[in-house]
Length: 442
Ligand code: HAM
Image (cartoon, rainbow, N blue to C red):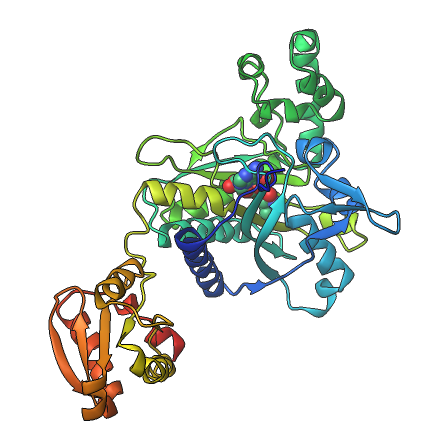
């Protein structure tokens, strides 16, 4: 049997892992600017957590959950999204009563959906997102959208499309569902099996159908805006007006209903095609919700949030060369010349690391040519070369691997030499401040 990763799941390593870390760092830094704090909820939840909130009519709950019985015969599910778990946690820990409101939670981690694997669609993927819980206002919704845009802008995205819609309050949605039912009923026998279920469970889900023929039929369906209550309409235009004032461009998309059951009022998605025109699907999706805390036994409290998939964001960034500034290279490769200096070079490498510079050395004596090849593969900026003669004189050679300039330095002046080398490297425009790791480790 060949040992391969489970279908729809992938290994992430080296540059891709570094890129994921970078995306997460930017995400957390921007969340911090808005006063968010990290939540780490379990990957496994009791199945009811998702059944009851994410929704019985959503494809995710109906078809895509990794659900199984644990050894105690309890039905558990690997989270297909974060929102339900975060709200469960807020209610279980009574944070709505003990914390200042709104609670601003951000999170990042793996989620699991038994979906059909295809471009931009995996069975295990990584979501980063936020939930702002406990204050109901168009301004909170607008701030959340602004945060989403700022995260993607800080990652270097330029041509983002913010699609926004309202699915109104519960009353507006009930009227809309009736109207959709009446519209689809005469046509439903020609539509896909899923839609035949959707009309019974929640006809709004038909608008999410990916089958082309069904999408054609859905184009003629009544629009949500015809059924909006006055309050929901006012709320929507208030949100639009705030985000407009913040300089955020948007596109009202009245077919946008989102695939999860908990939403009410404003919903949104952010899309961006890669330079090559590849569409990996929505980068980010979110919206407002009202009844979730109550579902878990908490008070009636509103929330709003979004999540984005790191895999999709990574793919577009890679296609658009947005990682070119990222430097994952080594600061110094330390080269022993001959067996006899291996121990000294090992110690020197360790000393360089304690000074805050990343460093590596081969663990055995290698020809200098091979060592330079290794240094190049590791993206090293400098080589320090130490042989027996130099060691006896208390000196070593330092070589800038970009300019090929080489000079001797005194081993007892290691720190000054490295500081100078990296300082000079920055001064002559060769590098950005993040080009070596000293600042980050200090
Ligand atoms: P969602 O739209 O289901 O929303 O997922 C959010 C994002 O996760 C998508 O925009 C996409 O980038 C990524 N994603 C979804 N499915 C896959 C997949 N199979 N493979 C790769 N990436 C995927 C939610 O999950 C909501 N919990 C968002 C939210 C938070 N709403 C309110 N608060």
